[in-house]
Length: 303
Image (cartoon, rainbow, N blue to C red; front, side):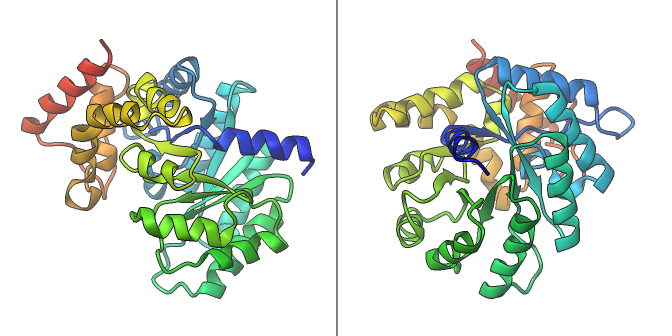
């Protein structure tokens, strides 16, 4: 990876990293037309980094063919208007093949989903990510860290052998642990992305993050960008005003172990006429009585 490309990719992570939803048609298939519309809306709204096949995109509910379709559609639709950070995961051969597929299409980076195998050793975590990173040395690689037992020195060791590991999506809900992890790994060495979205962005930025992921951005790009602008300027009171604005929406997403994380976003989009509310198991649609509250929040943001 050349130094210029490297710096461009690092800059792309230091912002709002949008996780697009994957809309479904009435027959249950991926709705490519609606997906392109949502991608254009994000980019037109000022978003410059997109993660097709993220968790808000129902990564684990898509077939291998659908995951390839989602990545290909995203690269094709946004062209050079945004950087694609494609989500990859599952078993090692599948993750490697997905990363190479993303590279061949023209994606700039891959985000490696936290391994979901019930038994993950520290060395095994390194071996898993090393296999992916070494398969695509041309791409920036961003581990998705959700395991609080992982230590910063383990990440630093991975980057010693895989210099294309340039950023981290950190999603352990503990700001103090994040601050320590980032410093143990190398605060300046990696781009730190707050992987738990807007609710955690202010506290994680105060500890060294420079980007945050977002599912809410599908609904209201301007709201997410308002928070980013406040955080970049160090105006935490202004950032917390946005935090208050998005609090209820994110509480609905986080309730019951994040059972409705994707559902709430799609419900808001449906209320705006942007896609169907359909989600796949193990997610489920919101009950009728909860839909009006989500629609009211979305309508308030779009004023």
